[in-house]
Image 1 (cartoon, rainbow, N blue to C red):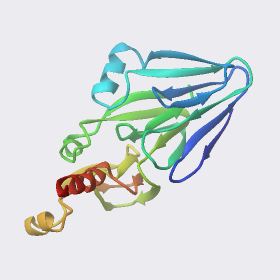
Image 2 (image 1 turned 60 degrees about the vertical axis):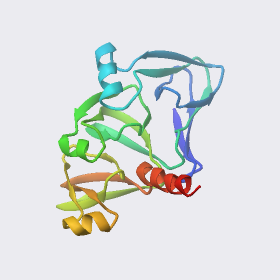
Image 3 (image 1 turned 45 degrees about the horizontal axis):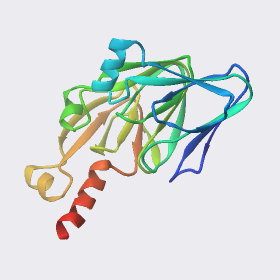
Length: 220
């Protein structure tokens, strides 16, 4: 199975070239097009109760699609927002993803739900995150570009920009500075991440888009 991320970074999509017998899992509604030689099976995302947890706690669909190639064929996966797509290969490791970031993975990857903590909830990111673990490749997307930081000690991230992080990373949410600076600088709450570990950031945030859109709506 040959997988290529095309049209990066603004309008990235995943092109999957499949040989007979190849299998790949995709998030519900992620498939944009596919060959008639590829068969699709919808199933619960890890069983009924696990699927419920992923839907209401991890921000993912209850169902996941399994694509099986009966002969040579192709699939194209996309994401709802304009932005880049990253591929990570797990080798007995795991990664936490923000709600809605997951797009596709190989069938050897396990999809679960991990506790994100109250700091994540205060930062409007939810109490739980989707946890991918095991062996195989995972593809996830972001709003805007994706950039990576290796965290040794402490790093500050504006809320809404953290897309994924390794389980060795710890998160705390607090004010950007003092009370005056936090409210009048426009930064408000920020996420403080503590290493060691790797984090993945997106260059745009949905809250920023919403605020920008609202400013035009109220003007008119």
